[in-house]
Image 1 (tube, one colour):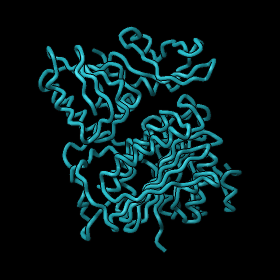
Image 2 (cartoon, rainbow over the protein chains, first blue to last red; image 1 turned 180 degrees about the horizontal axis):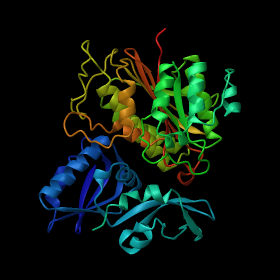
Image 3 (cartoon, one colour; image 1 turned 135 degrees about the vertical axis):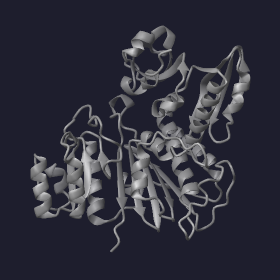
Image 4 (cartoon, helix red, strand yellow; image 1 turned 120 degrees about the horizontal axis):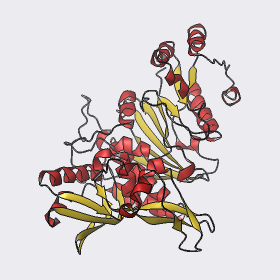
Length: 153
Length: 294
């Protein structure tokens, strides 16, 4: 896993696994918040999940909020499977398929902009980056958006 | 149901009510009991399966009664039966036929049973524990190179990672039955000798990507496997997180345990490449087969 400090956030990329040492990320928190950009995370296994949960627990003890941006599909898969991994998510990638040309694409969904819609399990409308036609959400909303359920804050 | 199970050549009897099925179990002592998940609406279903098991029958639960968008009955726990087949027809027919044939014939092992004729299985034997990372990354690259979607390749990589990790670290037991590698750090590089041998095979046809992981300890028990499938509990101490099998199960479409106690454990994960996620059920099928001693 690589860590790249950016303006107001950390950009993580690669694999989150037994070698990731996520607790070290808390040292990058600013003003009681740690903001993580996860667009480049391609893999997270059960040991990475445990490390992630430990990191969230340590953050809570130190009154640090952990916020996620541009969460990749592999990480969303884990957030949906293991409830204890969830934390505030501002935006995430979701699978869409084009009705016109058949292209499959991971599209960025803004939680803050589409909150009520997502709460009703309605995927935001998307246009195909290739042909401009309407894209269809390519998963069950009940399954893919379930990580948003406890996010009341 | 009669058509699907009839191909086994065995006699097939049908019952609409649990009471009738219970009577059949008593009178006929069947080899295999297949029940629709709607049976779970009757509070007597656990007793029925226990009764069937007592009469020597294996049990299999399906979601026949829920075509289109199959759903497990609320309150029903993953791992409550040894075989659960969640897919609608025609996938269900394939799953049910293989399940019945394996149980009836007692021939459990090999991913070939789930793949089309001619499918090549690629084999790797691990010599050190750290090979896992390279093996699963290579598997993901191979699948992408063969035209599989990023989603499928990522799912297969995760499943393979968890199954190999289990075989390397959880399977080895000493003479006293102690899992002597379970609590070792997973990032340490352990040698794998002939006794600890872990064999990985994978193959892909037009229906599934299959990953098969074998160890020669046979230390994974049926009840442990069943309990692990629905786990959300994270082990805070020790080497593993205790989530590996649950994550593997939820990341594939069908997880198969072939258990020969004290001799061999084989786990096969199937990821269906035919249907987009939006057309697949929210749950996955599983089988836990245990080799019967003669």
